[in-house]
Image (cartoon, rainbow, N blue to C red; front, side):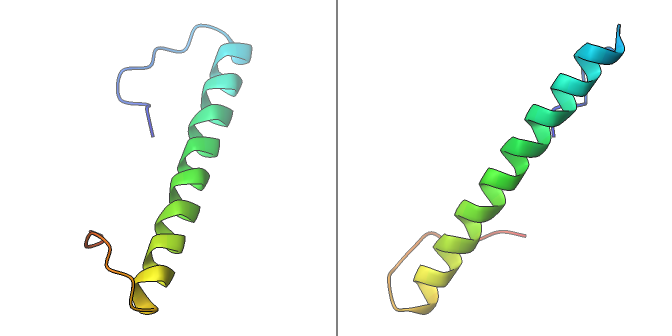
Length: 50
């Protein structure tokens, strides 16, 4: 999620960072779900790791 080396200095910066990290996580979750659904329909995709 991008928090391993982040140093909080102000509330605004933390809020923006968390918002962008969660948005990126949601985007990747949607892409992963779509790839899994296509794999179920017979389209060959790379294996999904959990």
